[in-house]
Picture 1 (cartoon, one colour):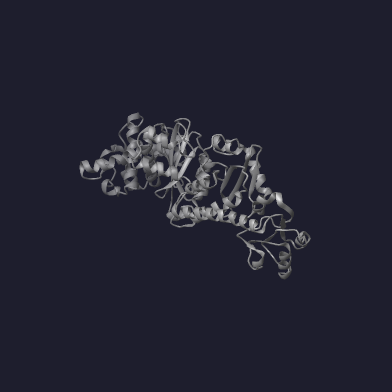
Picture 2 (tube, rainbow, N blue to C red):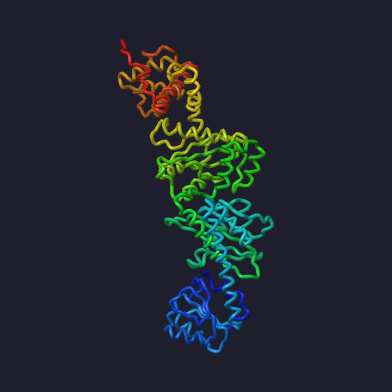
Length: 534
């Protein structure tokens, strides 16, 4: 326990005098002064003022982290306390009543501490700890990321009139004005005290910040109606923080506060949920209920060692880029459900792709993003396709620094990937070269023999509406070089590639060869022998 005021509150009408130098002294036990031992810290000693005076003199006033409560005013110790920086309070109360009340309060918090530690040892979910804490104190508790966005809450009281509750429940984050008030309370508080506010409607508010690696990890906010009995909200939140840190320090635990979303996503993947109504009911229980359209984002890392520890700070940064989202860790990846207001492609201003790319580069990560869907029954399909796009993107990305793989950029490769097993089963071999346009094979042979890139030039030329300037930019060549290579291509191929259908076949044939070479890792030289040219 940290606040002396918490212990003194039941006796506030019986205070004779109070000389307090350290109001935030930690308290772990209460003893009678006859058992005084100056070596035992974090203790409140209770007894007659004369016995306290004798004990102080015997200890030469060296009583760090010790508080004395006198049950009479026979000896006024306020001057001595002020002179030596001691905590001494005189109460007009019975010594046994004082001792019993303090121990009752300490025992209550010890029971709470044990209860939360038991939950921490039995779960991988921050929510479970928050739910248990909320039930113990009959309070609304919010878990916020460092952008003051609600990750999870236990607030069910729709009649709360406390301003912060109204904001957090309505918009999922604190307003700029409330953020400033919380920051001001933090700055005004001592390191032990934490932030505490009261409002005019009979509510008290506590905030506790958890910092890891010099970064704000998350904030816990507890809001409750002010009651006659005293309450040390900061110490309780500190106990919650300790329980959460215990859970997260277990190296076998990979956790995040999105356990409800993870449970929902797992049930969808395992086909335990399939109808729109069933899924919508579960969505309504998430911390962020998605908008009409939803895109899935999957984030993978180059190696297992690159997975951020703790992951929560990384996820918080992702959520700042995708504010209407739910996130969880599932199957060694981070999954995000990103709410959208329309069906437009994510490449059209839905997020800051440069910031996202920089974040992925910093953590050696990749992201695959699905097209939006409004049908909840399509969530499983959308998520599984996004997983597949991740696998394709890592091997087939056109540039080595690409880290964001959009569904529309890899849809053709996905079609090829889905067809590949059927081709092998139907024909008993994996030589999909037979499906390609003959001129593409002709150029592949030439490039293999003469170490050229005519096939790349033709592909990007078809892809860019037969525009030399766009092609040169896409392939990082001078336009004159592209023009010269196109003349060579005209000498080698027979089909009219200005025809739209021929262009389409050239593009898909090029992708079939890349898929076989880079994804299936088939040695194309064995399937397409190099020939001499006249």
